[in-house]
Length: 61
Image 1 (spheres, rainbow, N blue to C red):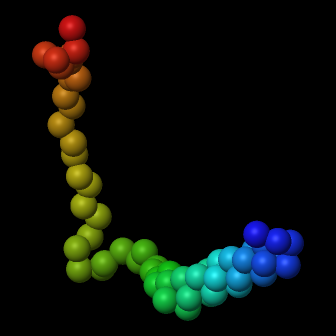
Image 2 (cartoon, one colour):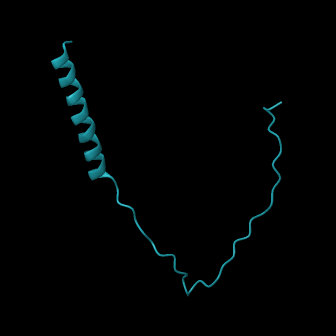
């Protein structure tokens, strides 16, 4: 490839990359902001988790 064709290929690659980022920006899902307000009907519920012990796997000997 001579220099003009080589630079044209890099220019085309740059434009394709910019176009892909642009399309990705357009189709990306917007972030959803939520406010975490406690529900007055539910009240304060506390979840209790059971404790467990992690042991070695039988495959790791």
